[in-house]
Image 1 (cartoon, rainbow, N blue to C red):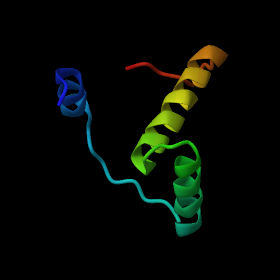
Image 2: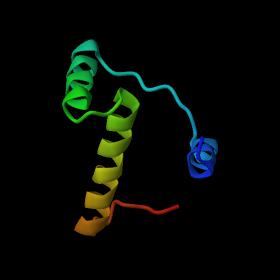
Image 3: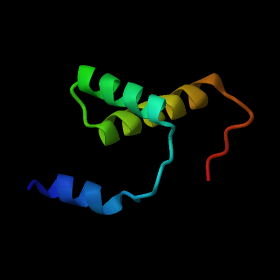
Image 4: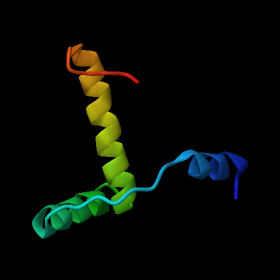
Length: 64
């Protein structure tokens, strides 16, 4: 495996995410359409949401 991939995986934190079955089904279908794993799709969506939040200059955004 490439070193970058191994380092990236070591830096990620695993956690449990609870979603209702209908949302899970929709996320799985969306991930498949975008040729991503479910985990990759959720990570992509969260990343995009954070970028949008930062761009909007929301006062509710806290960088820790």
